[in-house]
Length: 94
Image (cartoon, rainbow, N blue to C red; front, side, top):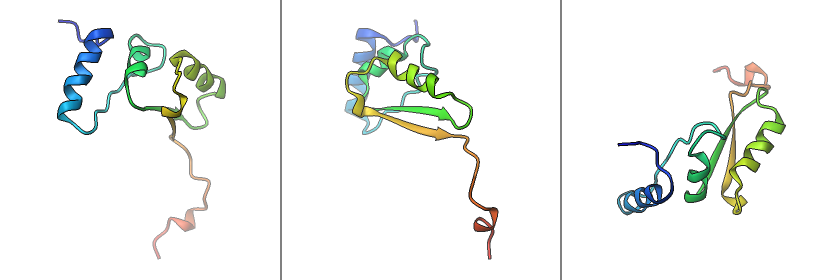
């Protein structure tokens, strides 16, 4: 059986699991790969993880366009792999 959850199968899966759980977290992989757009349309919120100082702004903008979200307020962005620009002495134990 295919593990690809799209369309009616995705909707049925989410309906069934929402009855069982308060939170359901799905990893959709990279934007542009199969199934991510279907997930984006069906979920309550989207967390877009962006590599700091690595991912270009154009790529983030394009990712948001590819997702074709009509309900933009459900998107949150997390900046990952950022370097600390705060002096190290602030992290040292006294």
